[in-house]
Length: 265
Image (cartoon, rainbow, N blue to C red; front, side):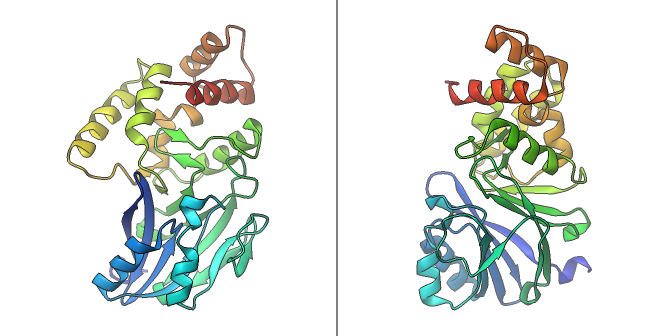
């Protein structure tokens, strides 16, 4: 598929820091994690687009709160995870399922990423822009990851490991603009990480200009994100300092860093 025939990915801002991703192609659009219908409806009307599908990653209200209102206007399928309490989902998907949205010339693979919630999923398009696009909700953030609410730290780490194994050029479209706060924590974990220092400068410039820090890439995150760097010596050492005891197993390193982030001011 050539670039001209591909769908465009557009962020629509909601609440204080949510991104609702609009995938548009011709006069058609799909929406991912519409926590609020109003900005989506405004964008569709402004751009004269017709909605063809709603995709959701998990059940939290800031990701599904706008679904019912959108369904009052558009009779479209709601694609989402099996096993999450989302009444509106018409097409329930599990790990390794694939589907096509022909209206926007898009195809996706479902990746199960439990941890933040019990049945959280991500949508992966391996072909987009020749490098791939990952829509991962609250599983993986730039320089961060979601809190572990319903799963275990081990589950969450294994979910993130699956995402980290995607091609390095894969672009990450997560659901929140948390990057600046995440960078501040990451620097507390790895203050000597030069790639992280450079990312911090880039993020500061983007936010000063009120620009999104996304998409990031898998390769970039492997270099700067402490929640993907559980095997990096400096991250292991930081986890041990936080715990005050030896920490060597990957799950334990991840759990320590996640707990530290939960309490980080």
